[in-house]
Image 1: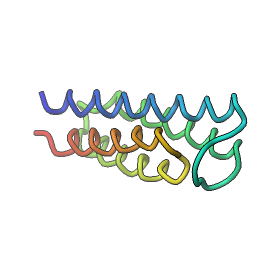
Image 2: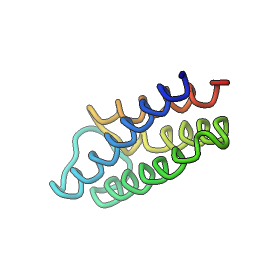
Image 3: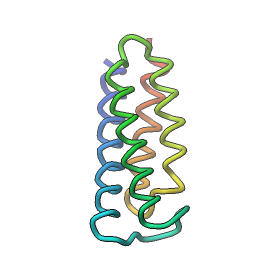
Image 4: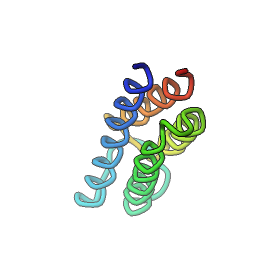
Length: 103
């Protein structure tokens, strides 16, 4: 049961990161401190969130590897997230840790 909770937290977090990346590219601006310009921030968030989605599809085969990989990807997205959408990265961190530590 805990791994499904972690999975849902990670999915919701990755979805928030994806929405943020699309919003940055569509509006052409972002709020707060970031690495890179608008295009860099948007595409990095989109690519890394899609990688998270692909990894989460295999959470039953290798929960530890999938969980910790998503945690690392979430930490990589944090400098590119800004404002409210940093919560998406934190949800992935929490969800990934739950998946990785569930038995």
